[in-house]
Length: 91
Image 1 (cartoon, rainbow, N blue to C red):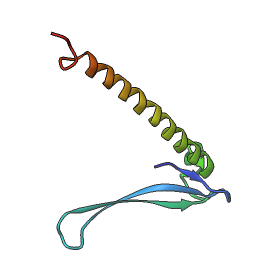
Image 2: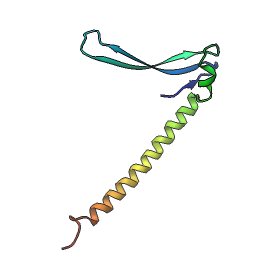
Image 3: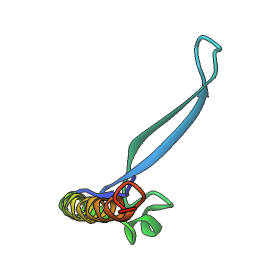
Image 4: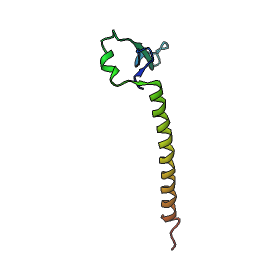
């Protein structure tokens, strides 16, 4: 999860919560965002690592593109390996 810089200057910051379940059957881990403004003690520290929503969307698009290329290269490698392996070797 990333710190997101909103157009109004506020930051949307990831926040995790660990709590006991209401039924007493275990623990619940929840992840959400909270918004903080310039008056928050952590604002200046988090501002430096924040991304705009557009920058985050671009980062995700690049990951998808790179993942597709990586998957294609892996499938080519796997096909080459299977062709050279015991099942493809002439005996």
